[in-house]
Image (cartoon, rainbow, N blue to C red; front, side):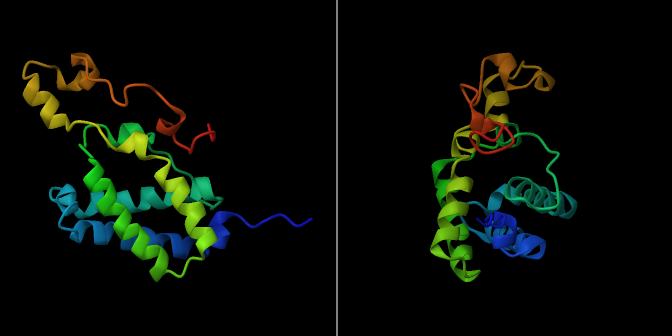
Length: 166
């Protein structure tokens, strides 16, 4: 019995993932619904975001790079990602699947993985909103210091990998 190649290899390797990440982030930056998220980010920050995204995909899809950043809940806590923003991002991602020529089987595998992180990404209030509602809070102690716990219950999805990859 032959072992199936890693998702990383089936998607075309490092260059393919780097291109995918760059295209998705650039199109998201240009999108009317979610582009404002990048309004105050520097070139360096955006480049590091793309590199971190590639590292994250590599780590979980069998590539040569490892992700050393925070878990998905920590990265997105305080960003105020809404259902509308999530949907806008996946319109972009869905278009990329087709443009990059992914088979229906690869689309299903990649999409299931990416969408599994929704509970760790969507629903946090913005950090600014929390500070505005609690002007005396110690910002260095974070949202938890004023009773805002997000996500409300820790789950496998808030960890670095997909559910069950801990």
